[in-house]
Amino acid sequence: MPICLDDDQFGLNRLAGADCLRGKSAVEFREADANCLEIGLINNMPDPALEATERQFLALLDAAADGIVVRLTPYALADVPRTDVGRRHVSSFYSEIGDLWDSHLDGLIVTGTEPRASNLRDEPYWGSLTRVLAWAEHHTHTTIWSCLAAHAALLHLDGIGRRPLSDKRFGVFECARVADHHVTAGLPPRLPMPHSRWNDIAEDALASCGYRVLTRSAETGVDAFVKQSGSLFVFFQGHPEYEATTLLLEYRRDIRRFLRGERETYPPMPQSYFDRDTVGTLTALRERALSDRREELLEELPTAILAAKVTNTWRSAATCVYRNWLLYMCAAKARGLKARSGRKEPKPVRAAPTI
Image 1 (cartoon, rainbow, N blue to C red):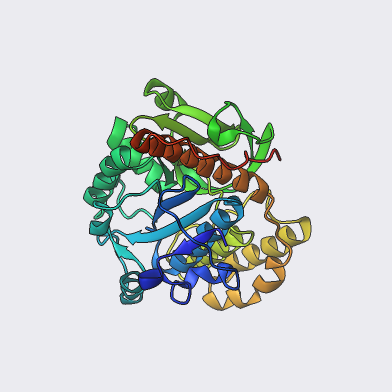
Image 2: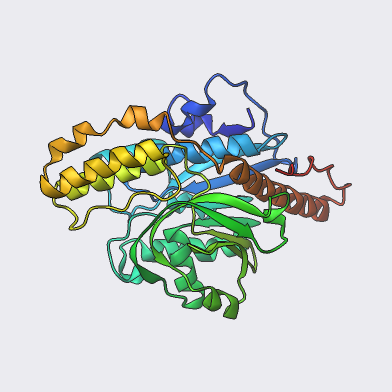
């Protein structure tokens, strides 16, 4: 098992999202080994998605960390709005963000959340998140900023504002690899990637501020991009961590919100995701919902049957990207160990496979 958690606070028997790791053999974590990495996960996702997000990142890191040991610590921002259930979950399984400042991490992953304010600076967690940004730049080898966290980071670092879209950018989109970089090593020229967002970032704004675009799509615009400063910051507008059914469950949630009157328009169907028969089934449900708007109609959505028909077409690309990210950290940690001790640089693990 290449993923391990702090057994005192975050043991596998306690962290709900760690079910994907159960049954695997324990592994020793050695601080002075360049192939043993300390990574933090700041999970800002809304309460209903907390455990799913844990599972997604744990499973992806587990798949990517062949020959690398990753010790993962989850953190929570106290300012992210939560229900009593969500607060109990993070207080039981997560470390407080104050513990981050004195920690020694090789890398960090920061997730997005659902926005509540039109201006990200007005979000209740803005102050905490910007402090994380400043800390990560000087205390990690590399940090991943996912979706809304990426937009917040851009706004704070370089004043780059997001642009609202006319409708949700939702589905699986073919992206082109447009740059050679550590993060994209071994990726094919074109790869599928899921997106689920209401806002976008202009590529010319990124270029003018020194960001390097790695992947983009004609339909979605920029997908992944990086900027090197004190730490290598990696930004994803898409969601390589998503499971096969994540878009289906998001679509079902959005349909329920429409049927409850919590949103005015019927949600768009995720693009390039469902097969033809499923599209027909969902189109028929939409027609009924538009003429007979009531929550009971959701019972006609055969979620379990549809879940068995969707496929994670982006998994190999996502694993390759995260493998490259881990290898980057191993190399950076090896250089640091060598500089501090004067010992021979540890032998690195094998390179990421080409897919």
